[in-house]
Image 1 (cartoon, rainbow over the protein chains, first blue to last red):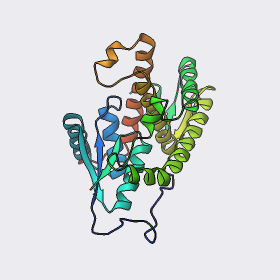
Image 2: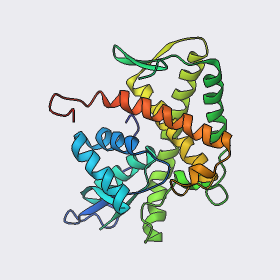
Image 3: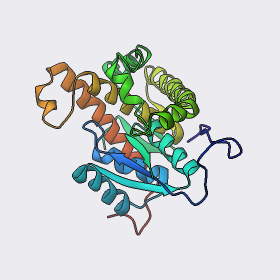
Length: 93
Length: 161
């Protein structure tokens, strides 16, 4: 990634408690290929092939998978990167 | 691997036929012609909600991320356009960063076309008219080729399975 990812301002933005864990969910979609999803998960999160493939199969078989979690700012950063790569990603607590 | 894309040194060589160059140049026209997400299913697909159950949080998310996402995609498309223009004159080499952008653009237009053509499941590919199926098929092939070549960057001796 060569782009700047927007981040929240902790002084002014709400809901930035460091105790909050936010989950980044990738959802199944009919166009992205399995191989592409594995590539994106490896590229963005540094997962090895085995973990990326397991998460991809969970998305494919169960419709969704939690691919990352952390503070809200981090989750939004990850969600942004996933959207940039065309994956259908959402954030939840 | 095909002879269209191949790892060379620190980059990926692109060796496309004239018809492929013309088709890929058309990709940019598709993306340039995107409408608003309300009226264009393709545009809507590129802007999924981050907080589908919380409209206020989603609106805030779009305020934070929307412009930056647009800028990132414009940068990808500019990089893609330069590579396609160079490929029109013969074999050219793109850096791994350019290849990543190229892959994102090809996948992006695949998402747009799939959404516009109502692809909602595997069976829908069988009902597409021939030209549409061929277009998605070719773009999918490019995605597979580049994803595999770029993934070679990740490989380690213990990660080849």
